[in-house]
Length: 262
Image 1 (cartoon, helix red, strand yellow):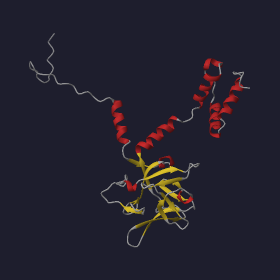
Image 2 (cartoon, helix red, strand yellow):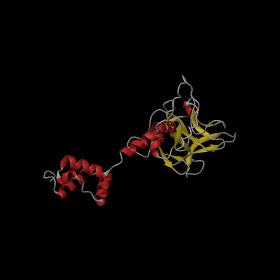
Image 3 (spheres, helix red, strand yellow):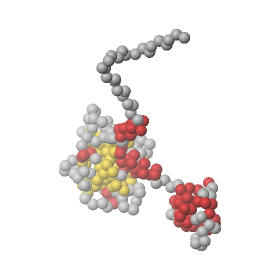
Image 4 (tube, helix red, strand yellow):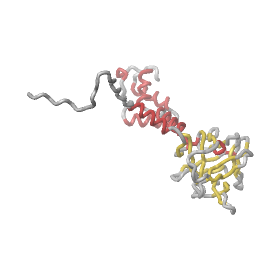
């Protein structure tokens, strides 16, 4: 049988050091690095939860403008240069901090870097120089496919208006939502993805709730679940209505597995 031909490759000489093979980065590390890159910077707001925290509010006019407050509390529609990204602020003056009003999930307040609140009066004059929160400082954002509209406590919408000298002015007296009333709002990506992750973890799981109940209070079935699809729906409905404990007690009573439940 003929000898096999030698494999072709780089010639090695005595005393030469072998080249170390480059280790390929583990996929988990690559995914982690990619996630880190994704969570840097600013991303579009697509839900009310994204408005909690630092936000950058722009309008796609020509040129694009952003809401800005100067050192003298003057509220301005600042035109962004063409060579500057319209998706993230250049200076802290362009950043507002959104927060939900106490006792409400729909109403928000927006505070400037100077600690003053964005407000609007009955005739639509919009400013950012209020130090305390009352009705005029509360806003109800409306999420649309095109962006975000801001409705004041008097039912009017904030809008961008072009003035005679070619500049822009912000006022809040529009009756309906149109192009001038629709803003593009950006939030910090790391806060957005963190909230989404926490929301996913807190999502109610009826099977898990029932299993915890079995382990804690019951002994039937050797700790196994007896849960139908209808049972799961019934518990989810009870959770939404705020009577979860009552519903769980009813289940224990019907299963007759815990003599202490009656």
